Image: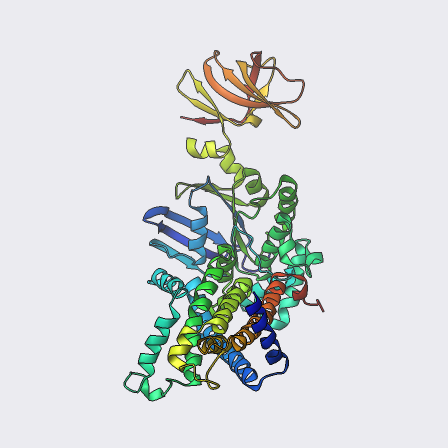
Length: 312
Length: 240
């Protein structure tokens, strides 16, 4: 294990940020430690980008405090590059960061190689595709070798193929024993692929946090559960609420619950079913994914649930 | 039409044979354009960068003033400078009235808003993320200004072109500040006006043709530079 892993590098306590008089970040507590990758997840307008801005010092916190125990770099959401060659863009960032001129070329090329874009080094940044531009943007942020790296939606605006490819490469690239990484993502799959720890932010507040599997298995409340993909709700006759994700609902002829297919949405490898459950002590609406051939609208089916979440 | 043709036939030999008077005003025009545009750029570009990048109180008002400066009446500028430069004026000690130096100053003052306002607009048009990312990587004010000017270079060159065009073709301020003294502080534009007043239309036409040629050459050169500034191939640097 590398020296210093687990060392606190950045913390904020009760951080508040106002923008145009509106409280955008509301009392956020957060710690980042060397060696970990944390995903910050939340809906649009939750205050994620503003929080990142506050963590890097781009905006002052109006309340609470931010403590930086290392150098913090941020890769902003928009991957804007100067009208220069790819290599010159990375070298330019290294210059701003204070890296000696003699070291810039090698570091820039190394970072570009890590993201598979060293072949583009001599090309103008103007003609890059969206995916290439993102890779150069990330390479630039990694090249400066910060103690804390903040990434604001690094996969935004990419088509599915480029997104998947970049995500696969980023899983290894973003993990470093010498660095803490906080990455803002929209997609839960991205968060699960990248992070040791999830932090969920809704309406300016951190509402949940923890290792991805643990958080998914036990969301603290309905709002977080819904955000984590629990879109099915079954109300029990005993007053309990069972929340399900499509992975928790299994069509089973011998299952204990009866349901009627309300809607069918075709997927690449099957269908997504919207199911209305009633009887057997439960009622509500759940979603399931089924391979083909699948039942059609109006069909009666039986199902069971696995690993759903009960809320009182 | 025949009168125009007649005057044109008289004008052409004056141009072709290199009339010394014509050569002297061409040289002075080039001096005025060069010095005034250089001075306006040296002062106006930092102002434009500050207006384009700055986040200070009063920035909006200053941008508005710079934009209003584009429509500054040359006669009014000339009058105000003349009143400042006369011996009784606050800058009378500089002894600039009716001098070539006074003409340089007048043209620089008129060109200044073009450089400041248009370069500020070019910089404000840059993608916000580009500059924000540079700030986030620790770029200081000088590095940020260098990045902004380089990235907005097409617009900045357009600002210099506009300033140069003003210095080449403006006459009002030169007449008042310099006096349009024959053979001393005349530019091509003010000399053409002088000849029209003297009813020497052929001479005025010759001067006008030379002025247009000079404008085409100087502004064409800058336009070429601007065009290349927007290109990408010439900026590549070798890897090794």
